[in-house]
Length: 564
Image (cartoon, rainbow, N blue to C red; front, side):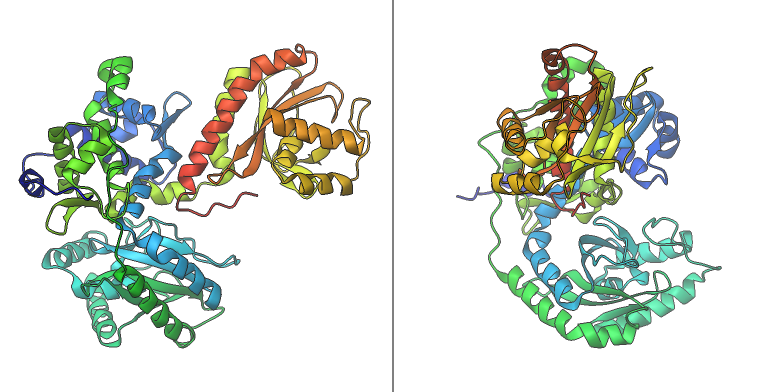
C-alpha cells in the first residue's frame, strides 16, 4: 500500500538553508573530473578546478574511492570508475522514460535502418537518455548523458517553446559567455567568429517553425554531414517530456529527404510512446524493509578522512532511482536506513543543487537529468577491455604473474586485454593473439559456459592436434576437461599449449549470468605444484573476475556494450 505523505514530507519540498557541505563539494569534484578533457586528474588539478582546499579534495577522493566511484592510479592520478554510473542509472530508472519508450525507439531504428535517440530538456540544453545506433562507418557518436546546445539540434527547437523566462535568460547568457560552445564536449566548437545575436535570431525562427509544424529538423547544425528530424513526445498532461529523433548522414539523406522518409513513422511511433506514457505507472516503494547505514563502518575504518555526509547524500540519490516516480521522504529514509532528518537534509541539498525536485504535490522527490553530468557519458564510452584493465593490473600486483582476458573467436580464444608482470622469464603474449581454445585454460572455461551440446560440437569440428607432449588431444578427453571446468568453476592447464607454460582461468559473466569472457593468470611450470597455483592464485583470480562482473553489470544496465 503506498505510503501516505505527512505534513513534514510536504514541507520537505520547500528549500531552505544551505546544502550539506560535503555533498555539495563531493559533487563538485565529480563534475570537475567529468568535464576535464583528459581521463585523469591530479589532486592539485582538482584543487584548481573546484577552488577547494587540498585537504578537502583529499578527503573527498578518499571517500569516493572507498565507494568505488573513483579509482587512483600511479598513486596520484584520479579517474572516474564505472560504478559511478549507478548515479546516472538511478535517474534513468526514476524518470521511467527509457523503460517505457526504449523498446519502441529500437523498433523504429530497425524499421528505418537509421539511428534513433530519445532526449530530454536539461535547463537550456538537450540531454540524451537513449541511443539506438546503426553500425556504420559514419554514425553518430553521441552517448547517453551527452549534453547538446539547444540551438544546434532538432530537439532543442521543440523544447525551447516551453522555456521559462529563467531558462531563456540562462540561454542568452550562455550564448554570449560561450559563443563557440566549448562547454559542450559532445559537439565540435563552432567554426569562425560566431555572432550570438545572429544565432539567437535564427534559433527563434526555428522554434517558431517547429511550433507551427509539430516537428523540427537539424540540417548540419552540429557538424557538416549530420542531419536529423525530431518530434515531441507528450505526457498525459500535454507537456513535452522528451523528443524522438532520427539521425542520418548526408551520404544517405538530405534534411528534406530524411523528413520525407522518416516523419510519418516518427509521428506514428511518437503516438505509440504517448500511449505508453498514458498507461498507469508503477508506484515506487522502498526497496526493502529497511536499509543499513554502512557509512558508519567506513567511518570507523577510515576515520576523519571519510566523509559520512557525502556518502549518505549519494545513498539518498541512488535510492530515488529504486523505481519510476521517485520516493517520499519516508521512503528515502527507509530505503537508506537513515534518520528522517538526515534524509530530509540530503533531499533538500540535492534539490538546491539541481539534481532532484519534488514531483506532483511535493510528496515525492524525483531525480533530474542533470545527474547524468556526473561522468555518465564519459563512462558510457568505455570499452570492455578498458573496464577489465584496472582489475587485471590489481591482480598482477597481487600474484606477480601476467594476467589476461580473452573471448571466444570461432574455435580459438582471442586476447582482448592483458597486463604483463616484470620477470626475467615471462609469458610474451599481446592483445589480439589467438590460440586454440581446446588447449588453453581460458578456452576451456569459455567452452564450459556454452550449452553442453554446442561445446561438444565446437570441439568435434576443431583441428585438434598435440601441441606438446602434455596436450590432451583425444575428443572424449577434451569433453571431460570442459565438463570438469564447468563443475569446478575454473580450469587449470599445465603445459598443453607450450612446454613450461601453466595457466589457470575463471569465467566472466554478464548481468544475465551468461559467460562472455575469461580471465587467467599464466606462469611458468617451475613455480610450484598445481595445488600451489590453486591456493596462491585462484582466490585473487576469482575476486578479479567478480570485480569485472560488477563493473560490467553497472555499465550495461543502460548502455549497449560490444564485447569482441
